[in-house]
Length: 195
Image 1 (cartoon, rainbow, N blue to C red):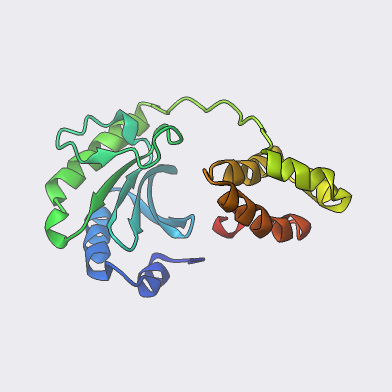
Image 2 (cartoon, helix red, strand yellow):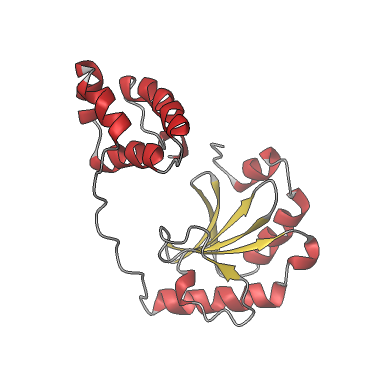
């Protein structure tokens, strides 16, 4: 999705429209400013990201950008990508009944307090590029592909490498390699569609 406004986001969404409207109204009742970032609604305080709204096939919810600092007395927050995500915490919901407005407002208030106090998760160390065997073989045997690959930033090269190496089976790695070769030739990063 490449939405420019929250209204466009909500008109495009296929699941959870009513639930996301309720979340939006709750967030608009606070001192947060509404914007779109990464194609989804994001709510900021003094320019700093506080919480985002998301809707997926099997759940909808909130993303607290510095959720790692929240006390989470209701134990509703999870790290959706353990090992990758440092600060972001997600609150997944599957029905209107899951929307606990007083708790949401309390979590937002605490998030704003942490933001005002300047709490930020430490920056992650730069990613190290480890080229998997299949990608390395393809690059060594195709000088044009190698040149195109070298034109990417290190983070983009890591995206390609991680995409292949995260597959456990050799066949899946090969399919992923075949999928990214045209992207590399065309100078398109693996995650460019999300920017």
